[in-house]
Length: 495
Image (tube, rainbow, N blue to C red; front, side, top):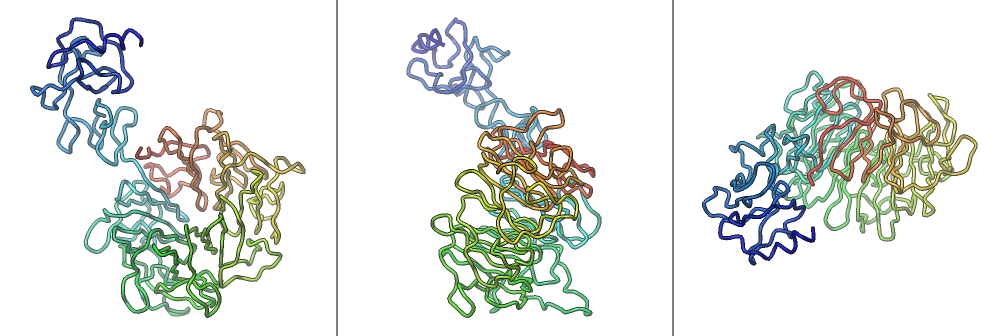
């Protein structure tokens, strides 16, 4: 490297390829300066401006890899020989693939910016396009038709065409929603409880249920005006909430357990504000929104988590099973997990506290395999071993039908039953157990976890996304119909 720096001051000529000297590999464009001219590190060797090349750059004459004196290929475009989906990755710095594609094993493939799980399906954001895979009996894939499950993702659409401007997505049990450019919300799938928010009449059994919508419909207020100015959306079991730019929250759908946070238990199919108290003013100060099976929460200043909804299993940890129709302080935490009938929170000492139903061992307290776990009405610590001390070292916690923690050392542990491979440990465990790859190595280098129902995904620092759990209906979108007992690559993130 010292020799390369010493040579960098030599003039290379206009084409950057006339100096008869040995070339040294580069790792950054900052190393490619010659005669006051700034070059680019491309495919490991320096290239310099040359107007005779179609792409405007030429590798220096002694560049390795067969590049010496050759023109650097043009930036990728839809018609080029590289950089498009399914094509080879281009070789120049920062532009190996088109936008929203990532270079994976030398080929450009779709990359994701967000991911959400329903009960037996998932949706992802490819840039700003939404695509979904898995079960489709109620139109939850949003592709415009209902029918058979698909293990290959199809593009979600509204009545006029594909959704190409989404900025946020979420999935409930059998419905999904997207926030679109301009702050409107569009939802698709099951609608028997008004969870799509399109003001459709909600019928009561034995009348036929409100029909599903296999293409996205716009969420509206009771006045019929579109819900707007929304920053994020969260879909629960059969209800939905959205946070707006002023710090307010709007909800719609099933309200039998108080999940809409308006002080009532009245189900509705149009968006209305969450209230601070029954008959009170609209909630304010929401900095982030989180929605689980029957519970919704907002983060306020100081990491205060204010929540409302279903407490029939004691998931609020307040010693009762009384539902909360208005927001109450559930925890003060940097990481809160809203699972299926349970909640878990990261404590300041890196331990984890959980409450609610311990069925399928989802509380991590050493008991509860299968359906043997009862309700825990107060918060209990996740244990390091059966009968042992509290588990420590957690950095974040997530939950669905299984519970997992991202650790401070970037590894992952999960606890709970494993009938679909959702624990990622190879077997069900009643206390935290390391998640391992199929070759038995611990999963490490993880930056973020996403969990929902019987699925978990890990976003790695390398950009790779690994997922495990139920896939019998193509839930994971990897063109297969088999469950994953260990983390398996799905695709890459856009980095």
